[in-house]
Length: 108
Image 1 (cartoon, rainbow, N blue to C red):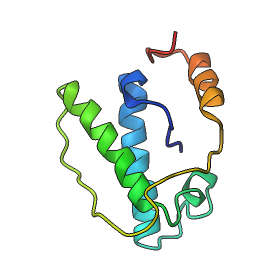
Image 2: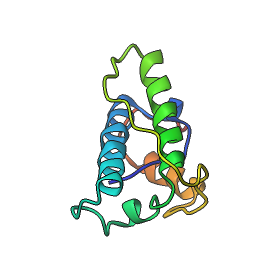
Image 3: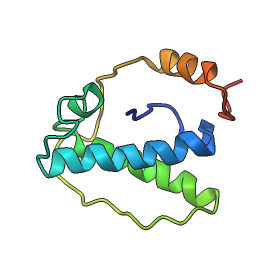
């Protein structure tokens, strides 16, 4: 499970769609106080920051629409911090992680 902190336009189709799906999972776990994945590091960093996660979702959706994908899963706006300052990996580390994957992400 991963929510990237780099521009969605750099993500290949596989990573863009996967992040969107995982973002919905994290959002639902936090919003609905679900137990599954509630202790996952990626989920933990978003507690109290659902508006920031909402902003990330909007960036993903914007990129999906540019690629002519249909989006039918809006999120409910919530209260909290709209800024995410906590990272599991720095942006530079995230670029390195993606570069190691055999995909079409635009990181060259």
